[in-house]
Length: 489
Image 1 (tube, rainbow, N blue to C red):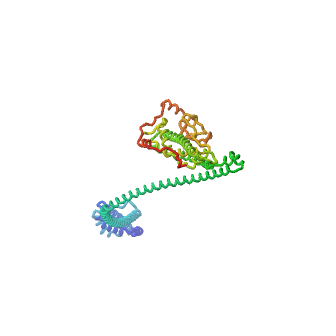
Image 2 (image 1 turned 90 degrees about the horizontal axis):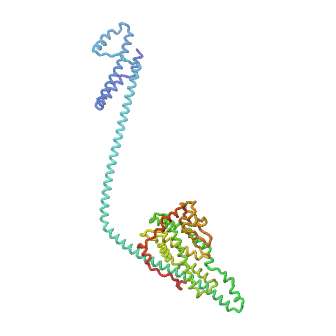
Image 3 (image 1 turned 135 degrees about the vertical axis):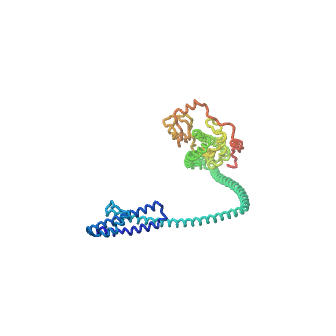
């Protein structure tokens, strides 16, 4: 009995019951009806457990007193209380289990109180944060109102200054127009200055050339007046006279290398630019490559013809006054080398475009013109003209569609059939020096395509003879005749 009483005292069951009762009294008006009933049932269960323990102690105490000890107490206190029809059966669990359940209940109640306190603190923190957020929102609203006020003021100020700025804009436009006019005037002056400088440079070259000729003539005059017959006998076979190199002969190797490199640059740069420009109007890549190839070939033909005509005029002009040690042919070539800028390249460009307009192998949209690739044609004409001044002139290899593919003259394009023996069409011509190929061209080889096309159509579509506005303007422009006057020689 003493041990059971000790365990009951150590568990502090009545203090726990009092704490639960006070907690329920505090939360009675806060929690719901179900929670109130649950707490009441919990207190009843706890009270019943304590009463069960007390009845067990009562039974042990009565058994320790013998048969007759404590009878009066039981009769006077217990029996009348039991007479009120309240009885308590012995719990189905053991004493130790009941005490453990009481301890678990105490621990759960403690955890509930801790969670409630932490919940209250969290709610307080959230309310504090909400208040601070509201304060920040109010400050942002006030800043937004101030910004809107400043914006309205700025709009009003800009509206008032708009009229003044319009006058300033008109004045600036007038100043800009006058500046453009002055710029055009200065450009014309610069162009005229460049012409003057070019004429001065030509005159200086001519003066130096005439001074050299004068010295040579004076030397010949001195030799002719000499009484010794040896100079007269050796004059016709003088090695100095026959082997004296001209400026063209001295620069032949350097000009040769530079022109070959320039033709390679035309293939790598200007050809691709012209191809990109033509693809805007022609979707067929084959037709675009044919147009570029024919443009280069026609440029070389036109430039060679212009060189022969230019050379004839130079020889005709120099023949009356030529007394130099070199031949008239060498003097004419030397003069052309020193005055390549006298070549009328624009006339050659117009001739090439005219030849392409009537070429039956290519077609072109009627609303545009071959002037689109005039930059490529101009550079090709200049290179071809300069190549004719070399000691052994450079030229393009003969090419025709359907010819047998020659690996020493061409290389196949990336879209070719490498087993095809015939050339379908050419992309770029080969450069030759006599019979030696210096730079390979590019060709497209395919099987059976050439013959199937020749059976399907006899002639390629030809350009319409009705000229576009740009074409008619190019044809109707009056070109000054290409004449070489004595003032330039």
